[in-house]
Length: 32
Image (cartoon, rainbow, N blue to C red; front, side, top):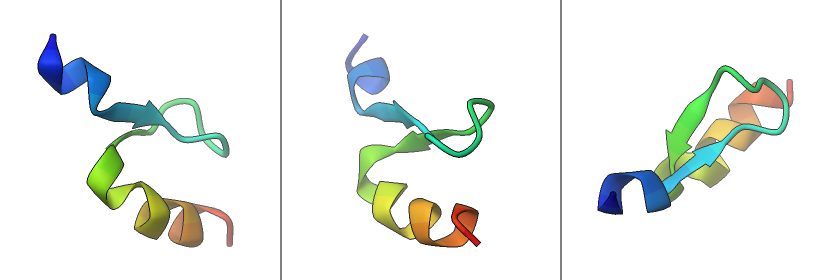
């Protein structure tokens, strides 16, 4: 359960599930 609470779904691609620690970096890549 704990791992799920740290996972975030990408607003650009619902298929992307990212760890909160990497969320900002992912958003910057995915937004392009």
